[in-house]
Length: 340
Image (cartoon, rainbow, N blue to C red; front, side):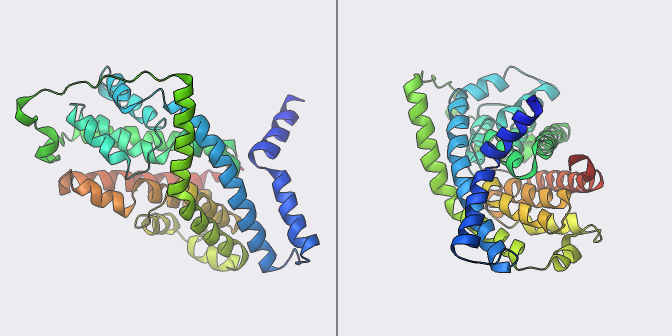
């Protein structure tokens, strides 16, 4: 009974099956579009995913932002400063999941942490984790692909962040951070900023502001992402997609990773594309590799990061993340049957 109740709640609240039924009824019965036609498949996919994502995103951003209001950058820095070694990297990666930052907006936080004297490896664990995994994306991943894949994605993202930051510490790459980041200006030690105490009303107001701000930033990427997903879902033959990104192509994961790096979007815009690819027979690992490459290694974030770190550290960071994503992709494709 409990399993059935959970399944019903998951279908109706998270997957919004009721919305899918309404959209299908509108196009098939009201507008008379053949359910087997390419137009029906594309339109129903687009309208259903757009409405579903914006509803879920608004609710999830509000809830996640309310939790995140307890973890300001200053408080996060204080927490991280209490840990050493691998535990510092683990805590840094976990705290990265609580911050609503994309790859570009994570970089100013990375700079602040580095200026505050946190080890470079610890700050890189945060920089990798923050855009890859957050509370809202976990639930959206569960909505699209199920809880097994969502949780596995989170674990893999955290592992990449911890290993990446740890390797940068082991390689002792502090000297490859630009001097204006590490040197103390006028020999003045870093001064702590007093945290502002927020009331419940303040946190609610902050959460609503985050909803408006993040929706304003991502709405276009969502429409583009869903549009691309709808075209793939409705008009591109499955045989063509499988020939390029299917399991028979041994380079599919590498290709998906390379294609994803130049793009700039967050996980909300890449999810519909990944969903459409999986529906066309693309392996789970290949689709997730594409998502991770877009969110963790977007070209604009790499350009911004180049301003604050030297080429050797930048290439090391990119190499670690790219290898981690590719290994993850092939692993997911190999054991993908466990997540079905």
